[in-house]
Image (tube, rainbow, N blue to C red; front, side):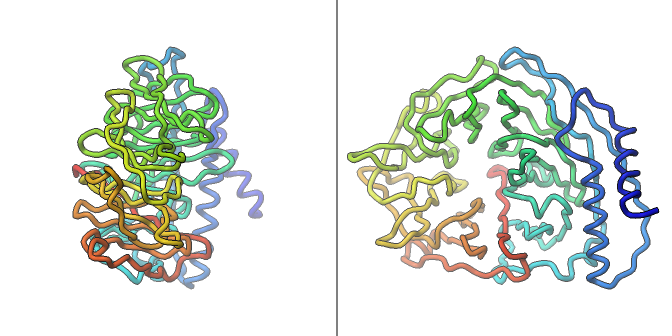
Length: 405
């Protein structure tokens, strides 16, 4: 049997075993074939001849959601388990894994298709790791939630269990955001916004509501979903599923960077004279009314950045003199002007803060940056450290964590 005939046979086998009401955006057969191709390439490169018997079981579930806004129901695009791949001993495939020159055991890192934990565990994530845009730890040691980069078919959400089994939860979503504690997820699907809980390897108790064409979820404030109404203009909506459809907050926020433990939302707003990006603390209980606003440093106004676990610090892009830099902003000292220090090269990816107050991120060159608050306050900005072995154009992805776990 030729390779083309084998590929067609695999696809026909999947077609006979999966019956759905409408086409799935994920292609389980394609995933299996690409995974097999990748395995063959690895065996060729390493010169190791392995004999294995693999049984792939695919189950797919799909339920039609109710049309009433905020009505609890089941999500539409949920794949039971396109492939679960527990890796009891992944070491043979990791002999050439990328190695960061700066390893301190503080955060987990996704390096191409390998997840390296702070404890030193290494898991191969075929079809998951190399496509990861951001990731965070799940509560109670349940593993990691991994959000994929946007593709023509949309984004995907995976749950990777501690033993390495990867489970595809969502496929074909336009935007996906996770709550800080990893217990909730919101995504844009078609004309609707959907929110659900994450329990184990499933999304449960979903609710949906219609939203404008340009609207997208950008974060959580408790159980409230923060929705950017139009990326071309300031302003957000708040959606509490139990209270009905989203309602506009009338705010001037350009980007939301996170939520503090006291519930206040940290955002860049259009303020000052002349109008420019400024840092603000907004109260979601009062339709994102500003509590404190600080203008002064020149901020880039982009979406890069994140709030520390204790809510004290914001790492955000801006200028220090004439240079583009990442800036450390003291959120407890916003007025009359924010206390700001240069922290390192500009942020070019997700930021992962540790509970001890250290931030990790990648810069535009794909190098890893570690920002220590104490050193920055002493006038010592962070320097990037190279990550050897990554394919060209790929960056390390530091993994965020539940601040309460």
